[in-house]
Amino acid sequence: MFNKNNKLIKKLFFHESWDIMVINSKGQHVFPQNTLEILSNAKAQQLDKKYIFQADPFIIDKGENLYVFYEAFSFLNSKGVLRCRILNKDLVEIDDVKLDGFDELKCHLSFPFLFHLEGQLFMIPESSERKEIILFKCVDFPARWEKVKVLVADLAVTDNVIFELNSLNYLVSTSMNDEMVIHTADSIFGDWKLISPTLEVCNEHLRGAGTPYTVDGKTYIFTQECNPEVYGKSIFIKELTRLTPDKYEEKLVGRISASINNSDGIHTLNFTDNYIVYDTKRLTFSVLSTLKKLSYKIMVNHRKRLFN
Image 1 (spheres, rainbow, N blue to C red):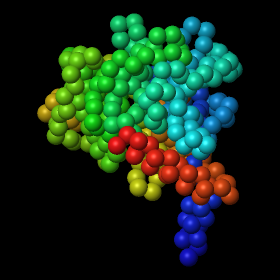
Image 2 (cartoon, rainbow, N blue to C red):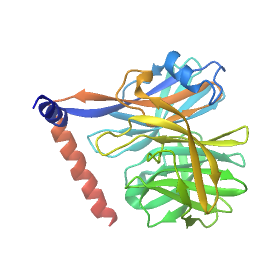
Image 3 (cartoon, rainbow, N blue to C red):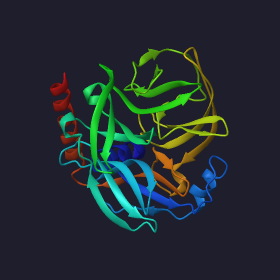
C-alpha cells in the first residue's frame, strides 16, 4: 500500500524538470577512453534555469564563445522551441537567443541535431508532429536558419542523426514505438530510401541520445534508456560493428547513468575537443503538476488534429 501511495503522489504532484550541464574538460577528454571518468569526477556547471525543460543540448565551440543549441519547453504553451545559449570560454553566460526560421512549422521541436558539410552548418530538428524529417541550413550564425528540403515525408520519427559510413549516408531515427528506423542516400540532398537491415542489437534501447562519432575508424552512437515507466534514465555508448543496407550490428561500450550528478535521469550527451554537455532530469514537486500535465496533453492533441 505504501508503494502504491508513493506512486500516486508522484503522479499527482511531481513533474519532470530538465536542465543542461556543461563541463570544461580543458583538453583532457579522449572519447571513449576517459569519458565516464570525466563525467563522474569533473565539475559540471548548470546553465541558468529559464524554462521547465532545457534539454537535448548540441554544442559548437567557435571563436571566443561556446554555443549550446537546445530545446526550451514551458507548460504555458506546451510546445518545445529551439534556442541557443551563448557562453564565453569561462562558461559565463552571455546571451540566450531564439532560433529564427522554425516558427512556420507550428509544431513541437526538440533534438536540434547539428552537422557541418562543405563549410556550412546544417540542422535536423525533431519535428515528428508534422510527420516530416526536415533539413535546415544556418544563414546567420547562430540565430537565423533556412529550410532546405524535406528529407522524408509522411513519417513520424524522432531524434534523427546522420552520418557517413563506407561512402553511404545513413539517417537513423526512432519511431514513436521506440523502434529503429534507417534510411540511406548517396547524398545528404538526395533521395532517402527506407531500408530494413537485420538488427543485432546489444539491448532494446534504440532511441538516439546524441551525435554519432567516428574515432580511429570506429563509429560510435549514443542511445537513451527508456521504458514505459521511466523516460531518459541513462545513456548507452555503442560501437557500430557493422552497418550495411542488409545488416546492423552493435556492441555495448559503456553506460552513462544519472549517478554522475545524483539526478533522476540523463538522455542527451555531446562534446567538442574541450567541452562536454549533457542534460539532467529531476522530479519537481508542484501542487499544479496534474493541471500542467493535463494542459500538455490537450495542446498535443490539438496539434495532432491540426496536422492530420
